[in-house]
Length: 329
Ligand SMILES: NC(=O)c1ccc[n+]([C@@H]2O[C@H](COP(=O)([O-])OP(=O)(O)OC[C@H]3O[C@@H](n4cnc5c(N)ncnc54)[C@H](OP(=O)(O)O)[C@@H]3O)[C@@H](O)[C@H]2O)c1
Image (cartoon, rainbow, N blue to C red; front, side):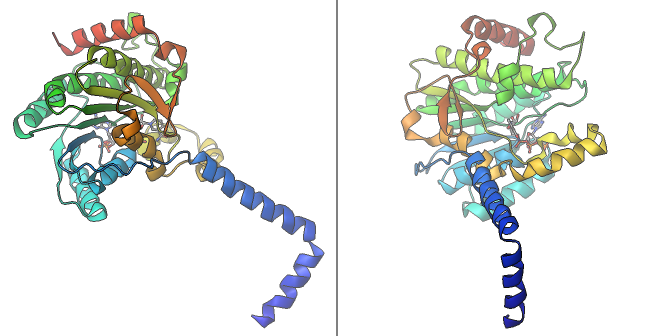
């Protein structure tokens, strides 16, 4: 130790300004990173005896949300499309939470038949459903179609969840007070519902398609709140932040190598999945939100959605269009 002290001291004395700049920058970056991590859900609410269903819970924010719900004592249903990944995630959720009451059910949101099968299974086998978390999502994929011929991002991110929620409403009402939480994104801010070309057949753009689907989450939550007034079922939508998950799996590989390299330093500033799950958890359990419904949240606080996310006429129109697309009376 003694051996190194002298040269280090000499180096610092010779480069005082440089060392100070590096230290201040380092601390500044760490403070910025902490600030960007956003709010944390402080609620200590317990969920013993309650049931939570989370879509797309085998990875990312969904898995972290599942761990939190299980730690609070809930029975947790992971509704996922890949059973191997789902079973591995369920093992992890049980291990990390110490709660064995975690089960897996098959759900492919790109198939209305799969959504109907899951809803029927849940209706028949579960006594209650206290919190439904519409978390699953796909971002910026190529011009893929769902099994039923809908553009993939709108089909999975919105239509699948729209049908699932509607089919589970009786159980949610029976379990009231209960909540429906739909994970949207800041991307809704620049979104538009293309009512005249909802599947974007004429001019497909992966980003426009994602934005449309995330705006649909916000409008759905708003309209659902109106329709559920007085039932004890409340609705929430949110932006979770920018998080290091698998969501970029279709986007990053499409970039040239040099652009991917440019993105790399930004990963230092994005949220971890645990941090990204905090606003979802806040909407799902926070006692202070018991009487709120239809609103948009970010960083564990209510925020104003973009103007097109507060358009009641568009919300109603989207509801009617969605109902006819999924074949709901
Ligand atoms: N990460 C961010 O920065 C960010 C920002 C804003 C909003 N969000 C939103 O946060 C939510 C969670 O995303 P994440 O970041 O945790 O992404 P992720 O790690 O990619 O997780 C997405 C989950 O959705 C599932 N999923 C995708 N397509 C599905 C389908 N057809 N049927 C059933 N499940 C399906 C995935 O299952 P597989 O693993 O089987 O594909 C996975 O479990 C999404 O709604 C996303 O739009 C994320």
